[in-house]
Picture 1 (cartoon, helix red, strand yellow):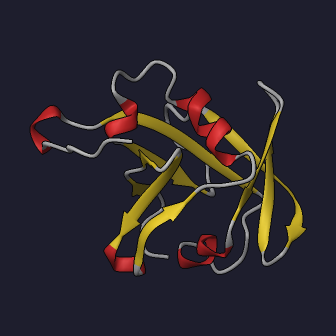
Picture 2 (cartoon, rainbow, N blue to C red):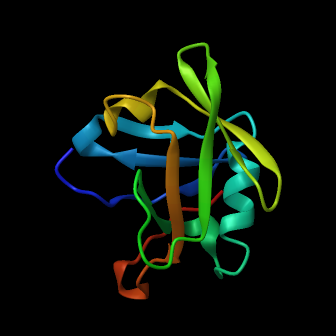
Length: 124
């Protein structure tokens, strides 16, 4: 992993959060099993987040992170993570390993609005 802080730009599609990452060969990769609800909490204060937002994440703390996902077990090739406030639990699929060699014990996350000039026109 060359970057300490990684980014993706999730958006809502077909009733859930998905993201594209050409470098990782992922297209409309969905978040499932509790992860969409965790994202809903992260983006609660971002206007029009469903059209797209920036999600920063890292196995190390960084200034301004909003939440810490704590590893809570493995299942079906993916990994469960939980948050403490609010108490939530979500599963991250094996696409996690496109970003990390091993499932981190902690993932620090932050959601930010995309710059308006990027023209992200995706809709649910």
